[in-house]
Image 1 (cartoon, rainbow, N blue to C red):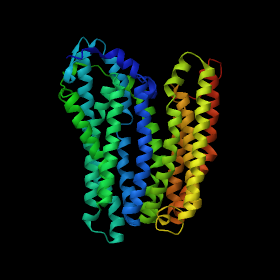
Image 2: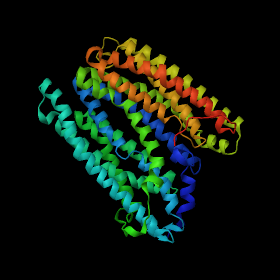
Image 3: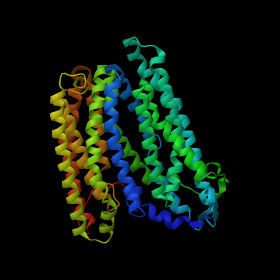
Image 4: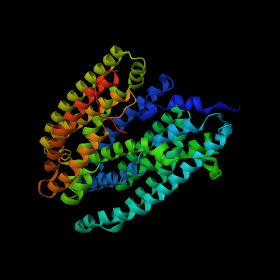
Amino acid sequence: MTQNYEIAPLAREAYAGTTGRLIRLRGLSSLLILIAQKLWMGASGLMTTVLVATCLTSESQGWYYALLSLASTYTLVDLGFSHVLIGLISKYAHGARWLDGGNIEGNGANSLRALIEKSLRLYRYLAVGYFVVMIPAGLLFFSGRAEHEGLYWEQWAVAWLGLGFVTAVSLTMTPFLAIVEGSGRVKEVALVRLIHGVAGSLFCWIVLWNGGGLWAAMMTPAFGVIVMSLWLKRRFPALPVTRFERSQLSLRWRTDVWPQQWRFGMGWTASYLLTQIYTPILFYFSGTVVAGQMGLSFSIANLVAVIAHVWITRHVPAMAHAATGRDWNTLDRLFNGDLKHSLVFFLFSSVVLCVLLQLIEGTSYGDRILPFWPFAGLLCISLINHVTGALAAQLRAFQREPLVKIMVLGAIAIVPLAVWVAPSHGAAGVIAVIISVQAGFVLPAVVFVWKRCQVTFRGQSMSCITTP
């Protein structure tokens, strides 16, 4: 049976400025899948941290988290184009219709096929560029530490090559998710991401438990490629082989793409610099054991924040609807209630974790985590990140993103300071730098801008810092 439904109306409903898939979810089932995805991230993250501490040595733990952190630079490669692509689907899909197998027909079919082909070609170039740059960069970065510890090539380099390769291949899959999501199939894409997360985590655990060591790091991206390949083959077999004539698409990057893309790119860059960069810094300056402690401790602290953020994300569509209808009482009630419950959960979980850390101090598990006060500092950092993330999510109900510049400025200040203090003060010095900048600049600036924007976005004549 031919699907034969028009793409453009679904795309316009799926896309809402910077909020992407969260604001225009089609139905409660889509939201439930997204919440399940967040909950799985929390549960699987906890299980992974336990198995890493159980199955890897202290040195291998440092290598594991350093490999993952360096590979995570793939999030910076497209500078947010995948999110912009969702909106472009809406623009170029007028009159087009999906048919079975991923074929497209209708008045807008040529333009849409042209956009799809151009996107696929772009990501193939990005994937090759990532592989060509990051593989030798990683080999150079890790080789000094490997030589210092007397490790053989096969003990670390093969794992990095495998991780870099599957990460590069996974980049080629990114536009397919954006294209299908932009056409209105938000629920289907969310389900694919959930299956990917479950499969990747399960095989990561299997590899860790069976002594696979660093090979576990590549399981999640590898099974992302497998799951998405099977999904495309079954649901959209014609999509990867779309072809077009260049004259059929008039896409101006400067006006149609860059005004949105740079906001996403800045946000993702700031997120990477504020969460992922510290493990490689400590790996380079302080050794694998300290890097492993930092990686595992940061994973635990971020795990609490991920679960706490579920209270915020569950009502993002409802907050967007309330903002559109200027129902400020409903907007405030939803946000204030969710923020309160998420903070209660975060603080309670932090107390429990600190108590557990005291109980396991001096044991083999306790030695895998940072000492009490640096660990407590990481929890404070995650708490600040959670609060700023919650305020940003509330502002996205107005389809605005005014906090990106603050995050970027904070990251720019933190990273060089972290590099400066890491050789002499280790993890404790890096954490002190992060807290100082986050608590002294980022959080006050975010709260100030958020309050001003509440007035401006609700129709009063007060200026607000916004991104162009």
